[in-house]
Image 1 (cartoon, helix red, strand yellow):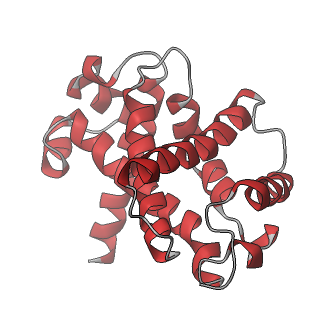
Image 2: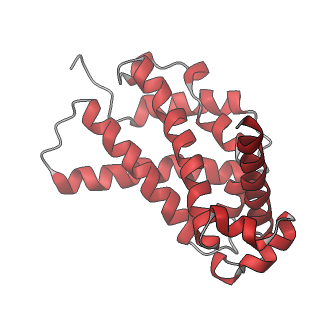
Length: 195
């Protein structure tokens, strides 16, 4: 059983790596199963025993990344019961997450790549923000205001990640954690008295 699981994991990793390589030069829609299999060095039968098409490979990989992003995003808030003033720089995990999946983020933030990938990421992060906003007990009666706040906060986080990408990930994650704490201290919708 373990041997089978390891083979499945190795196949999935090979396909993900090959997909990322191909996405650097062409959009997802232009990638064929044949060329993906060729680059991943697996046969088509193996491919079809795991996935129905190239889009499913991308979708499942995105799900892995999204779940890790969610964990990284929520970790400091959960530890502090959603009180921004209690979050320290060492609790922030987002930049470590991005570094772990740097190849993926380089594609998402590449100016030559269709915005579709950015919007997928945006919608996912916005969902996290919405859930965190609800957990922070902020009065969300003005739906329009909340929608704009969520979009602002989401683009703020993604903007930091995009700038880090532009600078070649040279700034250490620990330094970015400190900068994010400073930024959040001034702009957070989670600030305020005891709730």
